[in-house]
Image (cartoon, rainbow, N blue to C red):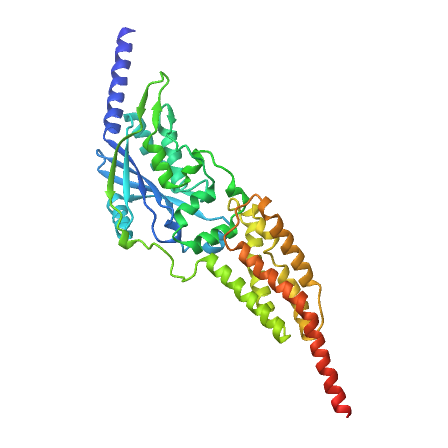
Length: 408
């Protein structure tokens, strides 16, 4: 019996020594890349590097791989049905790509035990298997950063305690940090994103942004069952420094969204004054506005109803930006062509006024163009209500004069 126990202990020691030898040569680093200039890179990127000395491999595991050539890619992206891929890339290729972008790459070398490092390596290689590598991407809750976070948390032995920033924020506030130099991109986000992105997030939920996760990881500790702690990050290295000249800092459009919105409103007021002085209605302008209004409304209503992207189905703007103007457009054209009045402008004036009146109580941070755009639309309805009767009277008076002249 003693001999059997000694044999078992010897075999167990060999296995443990082999495992230690295999894992002790593994170095794991979380990589955080600073934002780039493309829309998909405005918020930065997270990947995880595994250096295996025994195998002679140095791979970066990247959960942010997608293929534009995928069938119906744009359509699937709008519907929130985009699949991303986890792929292993040689370190040299990865770092060269981000050098060419001008983005910085910061490596946080993790202070892992031998068994933890081995678990991370096996976890990642399992994830790049053909049957496991594809996942349904969700920008706010299931992206390249949250996937790396899940990996580290799953492989660490003990409880992981993060160091959070004191201030809690909403999704929209965080997104605005990264789009402040890209106002039209920011405006597009704000038009489509609804009230759900304006709720205050838990600290962990903010880690969908790479730099937020990097900050949390930097102060994280691992606590074991005996309440002993160790810092998770052993060392922080700047692998690539940012190149400011290679990163675009702003968009090329000369006007910001708020400037464009107030300019449109100012033009509508001038047109209203001209209509009053000339007793003419520029109804073709209303046709163009209603067409733009309705098409924008189609997009907002479509993503509101059919997209599985988070927070798009809570957008209060669908109340005023919807396809209704397209449905009313034929009747407006027919009435204008035959010099008749319609109730559409009265209805829209009341509805826009009510929406703007109650906007302070709507639980959604509206895009900056909301007020000037709604005022522009409202001014066109008011102009119609105030002046169109005078325009019709002027036209009918002119017709009567022509008829009386012919009789003479």
